[in-house]
Image (cartoon, rainbow, N blue to C red; front, side):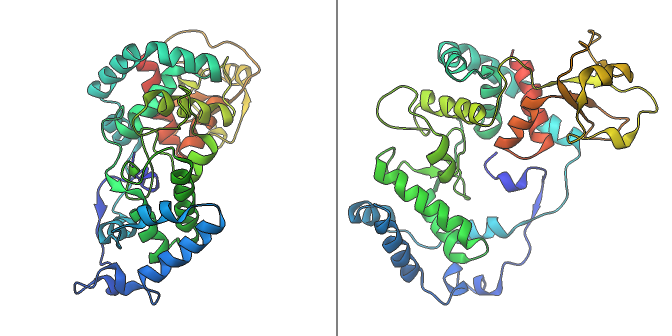
Amino acid sequence: MLNRRSLLTHSLALPAVASALMAGGGAARAQSQSFQDFLAGVSAEARRGGVSPAILQRAFANIQPNDKVVELDRRQPEFTLTWEQYRDGRITQQRTDRGKAAYAENRVLLEAIAARYEVNPRVVVAIWGLETNYGSFTGNYNVIEALATLAWEGRRAAFYRAELLAALRILQKGDTTPERMRGSWAGAMGHPQFMPTSFERLAVDFDGDGRRDIWDDKADALGSIGNYLAKSGWKGDERWGREVVLPGGIDAGSIGRNNRRPLSEWVRLGVSAADGSVLPPLDMPTAIVAPSGPTGQAFAVYQNFNVIRRYNPSDYYALVVGLLSDRVA
């Protein structure tokens, strides 16, 4: 899931890119300030923040505006996926099988992460699987170049400038090198696809080697996902949710993640577990999410569903993470 802003999109239409990018001019024609002048301004700000000239020289060596990054940033969604299309495109047998294998292969590490952060290790694996297919594709863009292009190009200049400065601080701390700092076109990095500011706040040196390496060190990468969930409010003694069957005639206005009621009240209204088990009449806050409407697939979701949404603010995404985590088990 390298592009968080295309969560529900499928085919991306390529509209005409701004006229400044046409006729072979590339991104450099889009700005009155030259790219080199922009980098000089960022360098001055970064030096004031403690980044050394040597790091800046190495980070900015040979970078230039990347037209492909601008093109991808300006693409608009052609249409939105239905829940069924989104679900079936991501919860495949291959991804499930690879998730089971990844869980078995990393069981000792995952159990250590679960013990330290009190999170569900299967959810950690599911996020890993959705973000980068268990680390098999983490992005191959030069993160510094991509972020500098987006910060200079101007559509979301302040956001990407902050991310660029954070990336430079990460290099200053020695967690990785400019050559190894690869990621998506939008600057999401490593196995967990953290943006640089998220890395600064939430990446961890799980194996204690002195670096937070989410690119090449699975312990740090998966530990950072666990820390992200824990810092977002994960409840270790609760599940994310479960599929349910809604009674006929249920009030459609009562459905939605923001309408929480005690699970016992939903049971009283006739909501039942889809697998035939008995729903416990607990007081835990519960919402009903029905991504295709009241007559389609429905889920009772709890606090941990909202925690997953902190990682990626999409009901579809959080549901697929939950469902994949159940299958990985």
